Amino acid sequence: MNEYDSNRILHLTKKINYYSTKNINEADCYILNTCHIREKATDKVYHEVGRVKKQFRDKKKPIVLIVGCVAQAEGEVLLKKEKYINAVVGPQSYHEINKIILNTENENIKVNSTEFEVIKKFDQLNIVKNTNSKISSFLTIQEGCDKFCKFCVVPYTRGPEYSRSSSEIILEAKQLVENGSREITLLGQNVNAYNWRNQRLSDLLYSLSEIKDLKRIRYTTSHPKDFTDDLVEAHGACKKLMPLLHLPVQSGSTKILKNMNRNHTIEEYLQIIEKLKKKNSYIKFSSDFIIAYPDETRDDFEKTVSLMKQVEFINSYSFIFSARPGTPAANFKKVDEKIAKERLVIFQRVADEIKTKYRNKLVNSTTNVLFENNTKDLDKYFGRDEYFNSVIVNSSENLAGKIRKVKINSCNHNTLFGEVILENKPKEYAA
Ligand code: SAM
Ligand code: SF4
Image (tube, rainbow, N blue to C red; front, side, top):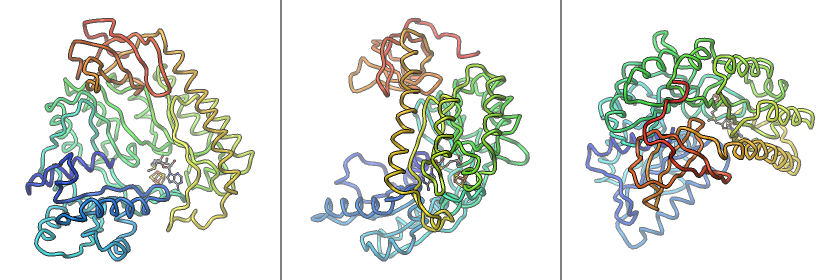
C-alpha cells in the first residue's frame, strides 16, 4: 500500500512541478513514506533523516516530509525531536502535501497533518490521473480497519474502514490498463471487507474482469472473518482472478486467535480453505504468522507448525510478536526472547522445507508467465506465473506485457529459470 501511496503522492506533486529524481543530491524535497507495523520503525526514520542531513551538509537544505504511519503515530514527537523535519503527514492527509510543500518553500514552518480525512484524500487523488505504466500495478480499493486485533497499530494509524466507490476504482483500473498494465492487485488492509453501497469485492472482481486488456487480477490482504461465500464463488467463476490467495492466519491455535481478537477459530479458517479448494482445485495459499504471541505455549506453537504442514502454504511471512505502543497486547507479558527466537527458527525451517519442495516440483513443468520487464541483462526477461513466482527466461523478443508458456528448467529459493516454449499466447489459466 505504501508503494501505491508513494506513486500517488508523486502524481500529486507533479501538479506543483515537483518530480521524482534518482539523484538524491539534486532533490529540493525529500519525502519519506513510512511503515509502523513492527518495532524499530521510528528509529529507522531518525536514521534516514540523519543520512539526508549528512548528504546536504554543504548544500541548501531540502524540504523534509515524513509521511505514512510513523508520521501518524509519532506526530509532534518527530517534529520536536528532529528539527530537520518540516512536516509530518498521516496516511489520510496526503491531499495536503502540495499545500505543505508550497508553504514550506518560503517559510521554515512546522506542519503536523494527521487528521483522518480519507474521503477528502481520495477526492483529491481522483482528480489526478494514475499515470503508473507498470505491467503489474496496485490499486487501493479500501483503507483502514475496524477489527482492532490486539497486536496491531493499523486501526490507530490508518483509521476506520473506508471503501472507495466502485466507479472510481473501475475508472482508475481502466486508466492503468490504457497505460499498459496487464495485471492489477487490489489493495486494502482488509480488502475483502470492501463494501460500497452493498457492492462487495466479488462484484468488483466481475466488473474488472470485463476490462478486455486486463489479463490478471489479484487482491490483498483479506481477513478470514470477511471471507463470504460470494467471494469463494468468485474464485471458481472469475477466470482472471489468479489462483494464489494470501489469507493471514497469525496462529494455528484457536486460543491464541481468541487472545488476539481475530474472531474466528482454526476450524473456521480451514473450512474457508476447503470451500475454496472445492471451487478451484488449482488454488494455493500464502499467509502471515505471528510467532510467540503473549501466552503462546509450546502446544499452541506446535499447532501453528501443524497448520503450516497441513495447508502447505507456498509462501509465508513470519515474525516474532512485536509490542506496538498503544495497542492492548503491548501490555501483555511477553514470551521469553530466547524461546521466541527458537520458535521462529523452527517455524521458518518448516515453512522453507515446504516452499522448497513445492518449487522443486515445478522444475520440468510448464507455467504461464506474464512478463514485466527485461533485467539488467537485456536478453533476460522477468515475469510472474499465476502463483506470483518470479520467473526469468532468455529471449530476444520483447516480452513485456505478454503472457507466454514457459518450461521451468531450474530454480533457486526466489526465482524460477525457464524457456518460452510457445510463440503464441497460451490459453490463460483456467480460461
Ligand atoms: N489485515 C490483515 C489481516 O488481518 O490479516 C493484515 C494486515 S497487517 C498490516 C500485516 C501483517 O503484519 C499481519 O498479518 C501480521 O502478521 C503482522 N503484524 C501486525 N502487527 C504485528 C505485531 N505487533 N507483531 C508482529 N507482526 C505483526
Ligand atoms: Fe491489523 Fe489486520 Fe487486525 Fe486490522 S484485521 S487490526 S489490519 S491485523
